[in-house]
Image (cartoon, rainbow, N blue to C red; front, top):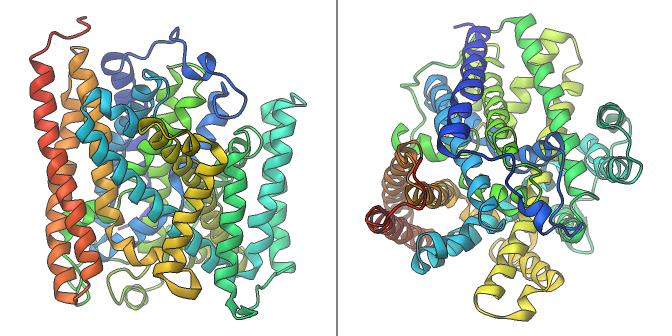
Length: 558
């Protein structure tokens, strides 16, 4: 099948989702109010609570939730064939992710911008809050530890990406000053920022910076990981407008430029989807398509991590409540577009079926490598760029997105420790510097304590990320659903995705439980049991809370 046809169908469906379905959800279900005083105005402090232009906030939100996951997940899931991955990304974006992300922002904004974990105690119950906070901590621990490994690995492998990746931080600092101090118009700043960012990408291959494989007995990979966490700790304490917002905004723009380049190359080259629509010849050991597809592709369809960003940083910067539709739902559409690009690169970016099968020799293969190699093949043959330049472009894109997610992830982990301090009345834990040290310390403990000297400990528990992350999405939808029931509004638009996620997550956890037992991996076996118990308890809490709330008089009837 022509990749152009797949691309057009996917993009058209997502556009229809935003212009039609999201409008219905925003106006009839969440009933977003342009006159509601958002926490960004009520608690404005110039550090965390900052009323923000919706386009800048969209850039922050989108790049924070995107990371490398919407590239890695779809590019792995293509092993079952491109059609199941395509359908889940498109339908998941429209009916799951957009509703989830916008709903989490709305729920948080209506509750003093508290995270969904903290407000669960009021909305659902204290038992659900305890479960939620544990799941949130596990997800953030996985994301931060693993993305540090991913970025470090990319910089060790592609020395040409080092200058663009770190140079983007300087570009973001300048952009923040131009927007908030010099009051330069956003279009002008955007143009200057994008030009500077792509100039760095052009300079990168000419100034490759290679970290030595070992320094004083410490691996180069470990040094990069420590440097990344040091940077993320500083970034998490700075006011959001100084670095976090402008870095995310300019990365959002460069992603759209990258997507335009990749989609444009597809239009010119018109490659064929060499991967089968349904792959009946999967490698030995590949798990079943159902339910693993729905946890392998999380970001790009629906992801619990989005709920943390929506209620952790985005809700504190929302200028008007009605901006939640553009920032949240369209942010999900942007990620769906990235996931679709990953599917096209991984399924149509190879000359023959044999070349594709050589990449996918086992489940878990492909991922970033398939995206970079397949995308570089399409761009090189479609636009005539040198394949090495195209590969650098895509590598920097993946590394920058992983970096922005790590920035936000560590900030969110700092919020979690502060909220724990508030819940358990521990004032020392509520201090930003101490909470940041606890966040960094827990990540480094996992990275080096479980992974040894190379700092790859996050990869050990990563196999549980998909199921834990989808459980988290279910918890966020539970909070939103209970709020809707209390307000006397239709709940099926959030309850249906919630029920689906809980079912597939529990089935996936049971399948993984058997797999870990057969492998003799008792560490993951125990963690799997913990997450499985949490999933079951969440399901029971869901039923109990909805029964209880439905018996109460709704707070609002319209």
